[in-house]
Length: 142
Image (cartoon, rainbow, N blue to C red; front, side, top):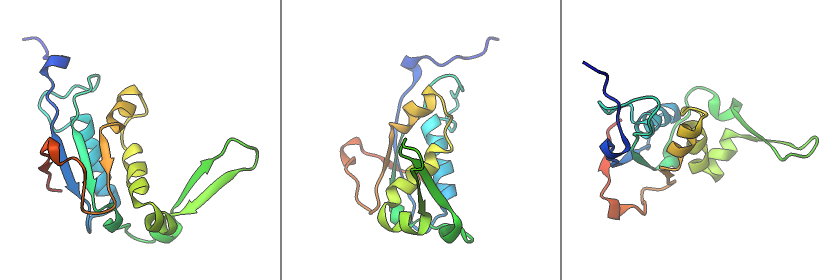
């Protein structure tokens, strides 16, 4: 028997909603990365993009365990000499909680073209409302 290789025609994409209220940031991000890659499907192959669309709501209510809220930092560089910008996660979760969740999911998908393509199927909202009702997304239990 030969190994099954999924083709582009075999892949059907669904929409899932993850509710992040009261959940740890890492747990929500890990589950979103699994859905984006398609690892929950029986036709999963690591070299084929067979993931689904993911909507994360209530990103502002995610929880960072331990002392991560005070100690964890987000760093970016502007490209100019000496311009390393550092923001604490306490500030980041107050001002841009959707971006903090996106960063966590980005760190859990591969750093390849498949990972970048998977991140385009991710939508994160700070509140409980989202704009994808027309796609009829299914709720995914964490």
